[in-house]
Length: 406
Image (tube, rainbow, N blue to C red; front, side, top):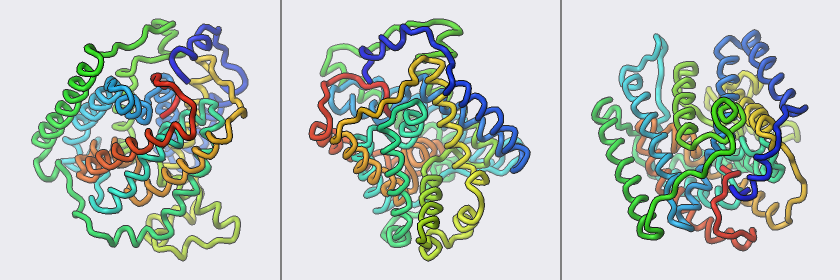
């Protein structure tokens, strides 16, 4: 949905409605029940997920749309805000990752090997972002916000994720560098300095490109709401969304002991679905590791990532209801459905073999100083370039800034 087309919705008098009341009830009751059954941390993480869904929706924080707009139109405001997001995150994360403790609890970053699996998987994920219409976080918050097409993407995202576990061990066996972190290589202060230089260079390049293409930098459109109404009903300034996401990722680190992730839950849901139809995923090496075997044997409500994903969906539904924009429609063109199917499969499979998505690998990986996060970003951007070239076959779109996807 474009900024222009969303203005009519913004003029409505928002009312919470049944979806809003339902999502609010889920967030409150879910937090209490999870806290009672699985412990206070699990309840708190569900609530953090809800806050992430609200922030993602109200800020329309799109990784996919920001990359597409830069590729198609040379506008880099979205990419520059992503650099702000990463800058805040590394400043928050690095000192505690270096010490290994936060508020007296052990913490560790999302640091994975950087190799062929990351390159191929992130490239696939990048294509899937543009065909599926969103990334991992984008798929969740737009689906929760009432975008029916994104439910198709989400379904095939889950299928692609579990398919990625079938031969995950083969991808792991391919050549790669060992897990490498700027925190361990340069220390907290040195790692922060190196990271900020990289972010500044990327932001500077987007400024040069945008000024060359347009002569001036894009400014954010004025909001139809102000003050408390804007905070509760949106739309938020993009920078506010970046600050909120960075702080909430830090909250995840402090509660869960590791950064925010999304797509491992999709693989888990897919594996449990496979069991229901008579397929035994325990025969695959991925589900034989202690952590994954334990997750598969337990309820999804015992899984941190699943609980946070459920919270994101509920939070986005609440936010869309507050904004007066929850209006699902099943009028989806066939080519758009086909793109969602292909895109979802690429997103799921790519995320699994690349050790994460735009959140687990890009945001949280770079926030952890992981080399694989930077490699993921480069390969995924290349995939986005290809995905943007493929979009005209599936979508009839003009060169406009899209707000309502990931």
